[in-house]
Amino acid sequence: MGAQLVGAAFAFAADAHAAGKGLKPNEHALLMFMALTALDTDASPRYFAAREQSAFALGRRVPDEPDPDDPDAESIEAERRAAFERVRAATQGLVKAGAIKSVRRGRAGQRAMYQLTLSR
Image (cartoon, rainbow, N blue to C red):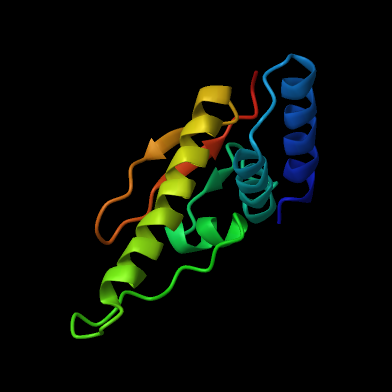
């Protein structure tokens, strides 16, 4: 998988830090996970894991969608929204930093896809 990309991601993070534009902890963790799961051999490596997997990379387990009759449904949904917001913020930070670019936006039944550019 992405062992070479992980090295490139660490170099990107080090260069960003040296330039005074270091990655935030969640951005760093997500970038490393993206690099680990993308294929080194792809001409333009891409990441397209589910939001739940991205949240897991940030140290969050996302509970399954609750049954509407579940008495804890409201708190479960709040937990899901918070996890997905962390993913969104980290992803936007990586786009802004030039580490990734959006190839396809996610929508119902289709995952978002990002190209790892690791440019500065």
